Length: 366
Ligand code: SAM
Image 1 (tube, protein in one colour):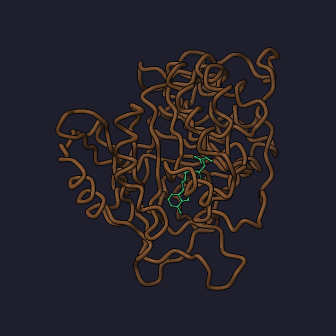
Image 2 (cartoon, protein in one colour):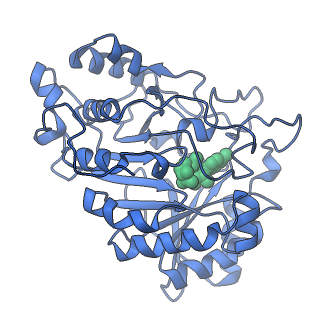
């Protein structure tokens, strides 16, 4: 990880409202919306498609990084553009974002921005596998990170190693979670993708983990976003591999009576629960059995600088190309508005004629 001392970005310091670019050309307008009336307030920025884990449901185990990484100052300019258009939350992801040199500088730079249409601070989050988190948690907090989500698909160290195909990872990730809590990044969210016959045995153990480690465990339904397998017919998504929300709720309720919690905000993707004694918190994110596309507020930037309007998009849009050809801030914002207006209404998982997206999850940024 690069040291935080050098001003690596050759741009003026951002002004209030994150709006250096908008203010410079006076074109700041309404909030970013799509043709379906949704406000886009949530930017996911992938800073690499490299990953140090090879999770069996995500990677083939053979493929490495596919796409280039662009300089951090280009991500920084993209973030400023989006914040000037109404983005209120930026999540750094990948690949594995903690593999990217200079990430701390990018977090620090982004933390200076202010949302264009709100007095609140920009919400800065990261999604990480946690393997390199322990020494970085405090520096990330000091750089301005607000929250952290750690992906963890088993609390049994053996199952964890079989899923990630990396030995000794579980202890490192658990230490990373504890370091994040110590650094003031709690409550830490722990995301677990459930696959039938693979880690669905872990549901009750995760409930216990939430209670003892004081983390919010979120179970996520498996989506058809894995790397196309190098082995024909092997390990592709089927509806049967998905462990649906209803089943997870029933299993948790049998473990200990569940109590529903209200959503934190209107576009909350998780159904939230605690247990009858108020200890532990569980979220269930069910994009397959209960899609939430109608409330989707997300746009995504890939590590090679392409804009995607949906995880399941068939194409991506060349933002970095336009920047390199010298487009002005006003031109870029107008183009972003046009692209985002065409955001897909919803995904079509499980429907006849479903088309796989043009990139896998690791190449988009989860
Ligand atoms: N490396 C980081 C991490 O592990 O959190 C960030 C990238 S990873 C692609 C982001 C999240 O996507 C992880 O929680 C991962 O489990 C999840 N994910 C990957 N493939 C998925 C799939 N097919 N369906 C649902 N979630 C998936």
